[in-house]
Length: 384
Image (cartoon, rainbow, N blue to C red; front, side, top):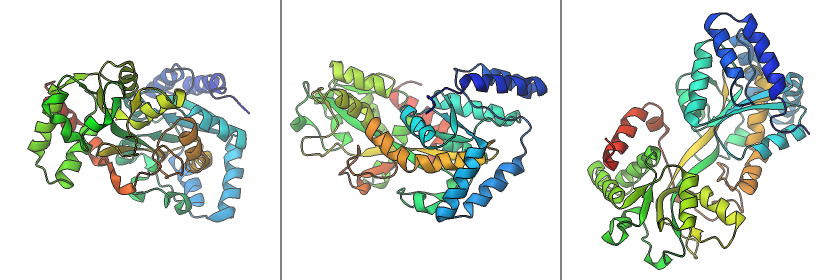
């Protein structure tokens, strides 16, 4: 088995060779790509857009064992898949994929906005480095026509709410919840819903992530569509909650500060951030579920999804890697990283929570509506 990231030196040599042969802005970009963070994608400045489409069309038209056998053969002949992601916890997934197939995974990881900008810059320069993107920004890339359809209903039919028009197959869920320090808060004091924290008794006891504008869009949609509130009422609620809160950026940071007792309640922490602390220490004084398994509603989630780039330099390997993410990869993410998976799994982090208790954010709001909603959230928080 090859270790994760073991192909980075090989990538740098290949990438440099292509850069020397490339011209102008393409060469400049490729050289810049090679300097990034140790592991990154190889690609081709001169790859023909038809080649990937022909390969992907071929396997999209196949089913069953015939598809699997032919796809594995073609993918192993390509030998490499280039994977861009902002997700944590992917090392065991990659290790398992490399152990199962004779294919090396070259991974470029970074913050979501960094990964998004890298792909936009590469495609703008005619350099196609990535095969697969797995991130919340997959929807943004798809919206700009840079992805290709993935047809495998045997797997995608297992994903609640899957929309084939997006070309994005959800792999994991980032689930926003309210977490609390069990040494500082008795669960009997907790409200049933988020708006219950507007009670003045919670003043000075809350924390909020000032960058969580996507959570804000989900809260807005939930209260306006499910509860019949006006947008003004939702904004008033969030404004009140913000006035009761300290601002702490980062979901992992929120969970760690919650554990340390810096504040009693976090209003927008990820379920997995708390679950990971409990995985390390089952007696850690943090929780997002009450002793009876209930939780504070709503549970807002954002899908993180895999998509195949339309000019993928290794299209067969890209498709096989997405297959893996939706099968064995789901179990690895759930068991090793406590990440809520898009495919519901018995014993997984969201086990026992009905699907109708999970409220999805609207991908359109964080693709075409990003500027509007970030400004609105900043204004509601008083960060104009």
